[in-house]
Structures are given as C-alpha cells and as structure tokens.
Length: 135
Image (cartoon, rainbow, N blue to C red; front, side, top):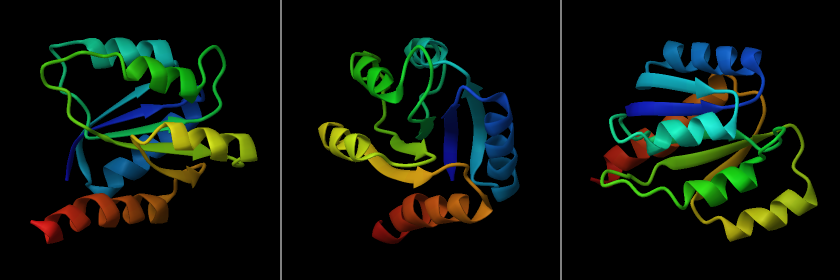
C-alpha cells in the first residue's frame, strides 16, 4: 500500500476523479492534490509533512509544466526524502516529450490521462504487489 500519494493537475475535476478512484482502490492511506507545481513543491519542501510514495502529475500545465516541476523537485533537500514512483499523465505523448523523458530517470512511467480504475489497478500490481514479491 502507498502511504501517501501526491496528485498534480491543473484541472480540479481530474484531481477529484483520480482521488475517487484511488480511494476506491484502497491503495493508499493519504492523498493530497495540487493545482499548481508551485503549491506541490511547497508541500514537498515542508519538513513536517510525510513525503509521498507516489507522485502522479500531468505533463502539460500552465505556468509550470512537469519538466520545470521535476527540475525544481530535484533541488528539494529533506532528511526524509524517499524516492517516490513518479507517473506522468498525458492526453497525447508528443515525440518531444518522449525524448525529454530520457533526461528524467526518476520518472517510472507515462500513461494516458485520465486514470481509470484499470490504470490504478495496474499501478498497484506493478509498484505494490511487485515490491512484495521481491522481498
């Protein structure tokens, strides 16, 4: 089970739907969602908050796209900074995004947006059940 999931999407409805599906899956204890990369980064820098096990972010957002977010994410210094799984969401993966992703090895996967129950189940099987079977 994920202890904490961070959702980042500039669309409130998308965050709401993804939160609903995550709760229905019983795959996480806590879900936090943000509409801007700036707000998500502030949360991640907060030494009093638990660092997420999973970050799910839209690629294309106004003011700060996911690439800028990831660059700033790399500068976060916390004593308890786990290496969360980072999933990027896209409505259509452009060849440019496909090339850019190579510079971000911390990204675990890119999947089509929006998440649905099946996609969340796949994440659970890949990252939760997969880890259990390796121990």
